[in-house]
Amino acid sequence: MREKLKIVGSSILVLLVTTIIFSCGNRPNAPDEPTPTVGFLDFIQDPTIELAKNGFFDALASKGFSEKDSTITVVYSNAQGDIPTLNQACDFILSKHPTLIATNITLPTITAIQRTEKIPVFMMVAPRPDLAGLTNEKGLAPKNLFGVYETLDYIDTAVVLINQLMPSAKRIGTVYNQSEPQSQDAFDVLQKKCKELGLELISLPVNNSSEAQLVTQALLNKKIDAFFALPDNVIFAAFETVVKSCDEANVPVFTSEAGLVSRGALASFGADFYQWGYDAGLQAAWFLKTKHVRDLKPVIVSKRIKLYNTKVAERYGIKPDSTFQTYTPNR
Image (cartoon, one colour):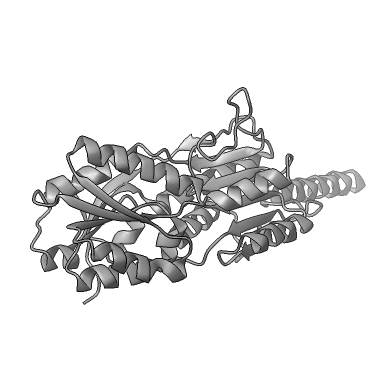
């Protein structure tokens, strides 16, 4: 009888130990492992840019990492468009010893890479590393840089939309930020494509969002037929002001940024910002799960779309074809 009790007791003990081991193995973070800290560095508060941030955290959640479930700790910092503040914001995140840093748009990406060589940086809404000046003399990107980038090639197709939807347009207006390399590079591409298409490009520089209304008005006084919004932080921050001025002058706004269509642009061809952030988030989730980066590298955006605003198109009497996706604002 005692032998039977010993056998039963031993079986129960084995079962309990096995249960504990398997239950611990199924948890996202074992009890002796700290909760991963995800730093997120933003430069401006902007609804278009925020689409990428939302996509990033949705991707993490889809793989089992969310602040709501206490499977990650998020340290968020926004520089509110100020470069000295951006440096401080990055240092604040680094002081929390993050497991990884996500960077939204170009300047935060550059800032994070300048400040750490060890912590993985996952970029979004930023150009290819060489276009951002982040490659070395051998053309190699930093070893700790990952995420999703864009080239400027798509701007060519975005400009063609003007010919396609407004064949009568001949004078195209734009503003660009001379102090932002990505804006200057995009302007160069726009200038070249307009020349190829026989379009006259009228341009004016703008240094900050507070100047946007006056500069846009000066541009409209030059009797442009359409306005082209470049991928520029000043444009992102002041876009409603730009659209209001153009609407009053009966000048439609075209762009290479899909997120601006919901804010009043007529049409765009460019990356889906939400998907852009989502793809970067999938890379970050892979790193959190595997704890290594050997299978990761910066990749190009996976999704570009042609999109038009139905309300704005109706206003200008334009009917895009079925190759466009539609955005219909609440009336």
